[in-house]
Amino acid sequence: MSNIVIVGSQWGDEGKGKIVDLVTERFDVVARYQGGHNAGHTVSIQGKKYILHLIPSGILHPGKLCVIGNGVVLDPFAFQEELKTLQNSGISIQNRVFVSNRAHLIMPYHRAIDAAEEQRRGAEKIGTTARGIGPCYEDKMARRGIRVADLFFPDLLRAKVRANVEFKNRLFKHIYQLPPMDADEISDTYLAQAQALAAFVTDTAEFLSRIIHEGRSILFEGAQGTLLDVDHGTYPFVTSSNATAGGACTGTGVGPRHIDGVIGIAKAYTTRVGGGPFPTELHDPVGRHIQQKGTEFGSSTGRPRRCGWFDAVVVRYATLINQVDTLVITKLDVLDELDEIQICVGYRYRGRVLDCFPTEISVLDEVEPVCEKWPGWKTDTSRIHHYEELPRQAREYLDRISQLIGTDISIISTGPNRAETIVLEQSPRLQQWFSPQS
Ligand code: IMP
Image (cartoon, rainbow, N blue to C red):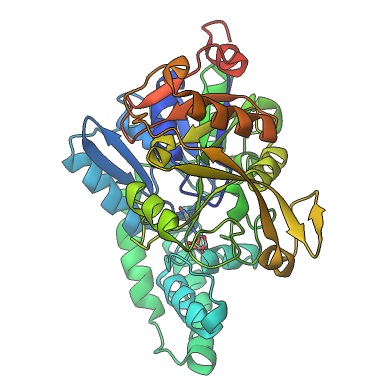
């Protein structure tokens, strides 16, 4: 069986949740490898909407196992909330959710620093989700983080929390002008969670290794998107983890030789939440139409998403960084009513067209998108289930995207529900990965 990574090829919110949900039946385990409850995956099943932040959307499929890998940062309270919501919806979580004992814990001071840092940055703010994600990863890298495993060694946990709080309180007093926090109170509330968490915690790298050796398959579910990756994204307007396919290895402890392929997800247009450059952004009625029709409001924070044309420079770059084997295009139906649709095919910078995605934000801020104009199809695509039945203009639009990116398109999503999907069964990648012999 094949082990596959699903990654966002833009700035997140590409509709990965629906696609993970759609292909999960082909896998035994779904594993998250980075990020935390900053992510928001909306999945609609039989008209019922589920929003998942931490737990892989594979949980919505009876019998599938879900892993929260070591690369994820875990807020134990958000985790418990999500479990409760799932249970209240009648979804069984018993023996199905496995949390890495190496995952780092998001602490109350991380949330406070996240908000205070954003305020300090003023106009330069990143527009984070204020969940404490960045400060938690900072502590991880600074080697003072607190891990899930520490919850089961109370004295050790208390000592680590005390050392951290002593340091953070100095920051609060001298830099952020915030009231101090109480280390013992924090330790008490976290230790009180330990028992509830214990049933889920394990060495997930060992667990996944067993899964692989038993011939069972894993779907690695990326959160956020390539352009939000801390190394490869539009730094510093990024999240603090490796959202790209490489993160699947470091964030789960599964070696690269066990990964058989990468599916890149891209919307038929582009969106981004928070600050940072966005060359194809639309500040006009078309942008507002896309925002409304696509319900482009963050599933974690409710913030309106900025909307713009499909940017082939971005997706080509994401395809290179992740070595995407096949593309999934989502939300095609959002463009159904437009008279004309544009695709950005290059960036003009000071009179010349760039041939690589720029590293410097100042360059990206200044580039002018070079756009092609394509006629709209003016047809409701949401009820179409076969590629050949799509209007000619929609097929030409998708074919042009595929040509510009240099990758085949194997799935097209035309609405939030599972049924609103066109699967190109003849796609060589799908056949290779999902045939019974693979
Ligand atoms: P953080 O991950 O909360 O630190 O936020 C850093 C940047 O990533 C901000 O621009 C957020 O809006 C963005 N971001 C974080 N998570 C998501 C997501 O799931 N979808 C889209 N953008 C996200």
